Length: 89
Image (cartoon, rainbow, N blue to C red; front, side):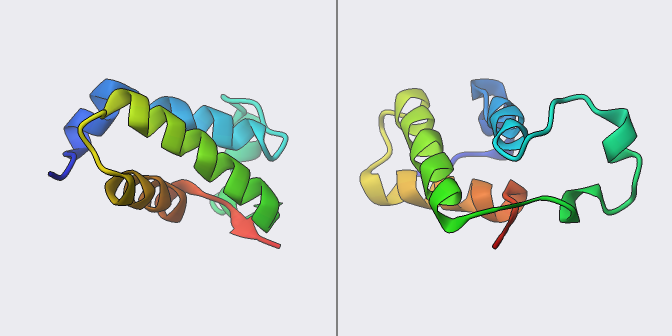
């Protein structure tokens, strides 16, 4: 069973983004930083930090969507990081 984009937002996937920003030292909103067209390319995280964030997202996904199996949970967390994660060092 796939999760629609609308359902992702309704359940709270947008809150993950704030945590993602905080993990690289940013606070949201930060107009001074985000006014640059390529602001998202100026921060990176390590593989360890990315894996830690993925586990955080997986816990949230499991709680919000208890009907998903482990592969689906891992897929959803991976897609979130692919779409919104930082470059790795």
